[in-house]
Length: 169
Image 1 (cartoon, helix red, strand yellow):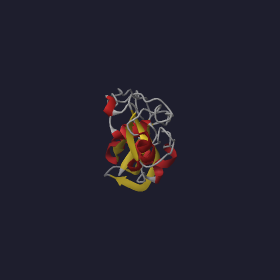
Image 2 (cartoon, one colour):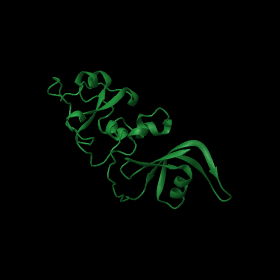
Image 3 (cartoon, helix red, strand yellow):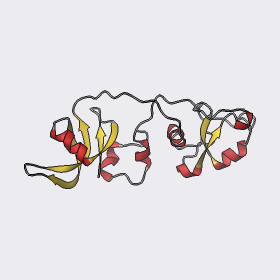
Image 4 (tube, helix red, strand yellow):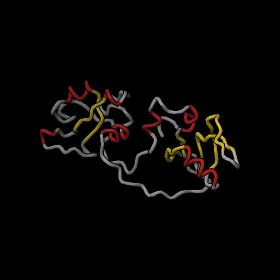
């Protein structure tokens, strides 16, 4: 089982094994907000198995550079086609080079957007302007991505996490 860890302001930070969460609770660094309804027992104590914990003190985490990947492009674009705006599953989206590769367009944050297959086919090897299409927003490299958006969109998310993860997390 996994435990969702929130910061002091109730923002999702990471997912840890339940054993790590128990250690955070035992040393007083976190508090339980939701549990799985089971208990963790030792010789000297018993506690509910944590599903969601909140850190008691603020933590300073160094943000790492966001690595370019198909998954991160889809996360940045909110699983939405940047031409027609349709919101769909990851396997129904492609990524499109705004300036086509055939014209020297690089595979980079600033030149890639999520696109549904029909829009990508219509655009072809033209620029959006040449194809009579408009981007919903200009592509850019994100400074950071919420660490749990992929989890929030998955169907295997524990029920105990749902109230702490919104669609725009």
